[in-house]
Length: 375
Image (cartoon, one colour):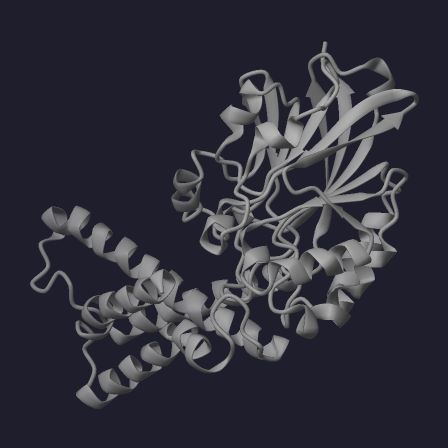
């Protein structure tokens, strides 16, 4: 509902600051208003008719078209605001008779630019993610763990937008890295297990020396939590729900822990509990935590976690506008952060939810993490 309110607010802004000042006839203004109404209310249409805004059950081409329409409205609103602020700043210099009137040529240019940027944004969102390789230097990392290779995937969001073929391509690219570990940090799929089984079935083909471990995100709770946990386990994913496991690499232990998501509280399910996740873990052993949201990184650092892997932010979707979700996630948006004595890595995600499939300057990623011993 919140995003529907935002899209409606953008529509009102465009009616008053884009359509109304245009020097064109009323019938063209009316047609333009109707077009903007259709473009801006795709989330409402999905909520009413196609299974909800989080996982609309529509063909992938239609979802991409909806993403383009919503993005065009958003970017047009941003461009209009930039134009208005520029007009205010320059007004004392040239003192126009009608400072906020808009020519049809300028309006067409703004609309065309927004539409073109949206095409690029949707293409960047739906393509198979590239590999992003990062070396993470950890204090007190045992020498025998130096060079351990982890494939980190988050926010895959298997859906009617990201279907079996796309998932298979992601699995193949991940396996090509020949990782020691594959770690998935939530928001793995959207929709029910009945609708998504064929799409997520390629997960059973993941290959890593020590297996595939996963934690959950907020989307896991929306369409039958227990059903999804059973299916993930059947596909070979070792789900860590406020739990940990110990692996041994070259006879050196490494703790892999995972927490649940705070969305669990809405469903009377266990919320994130890091102390429970680490209970009984061997002391003094390097610990990697999978936590979907990065916002509690300081608490993880206080518990002695060496490395936290997170997602959830999608990198902010659009550069510049990424500052809004960055603020909402305690300043974390993507990349490497030093939090106390811990390293936090926030991935931009492999996919994203079908309600807003747009990326501009925030590309998707399959992250290859190589652990290094810090000097």
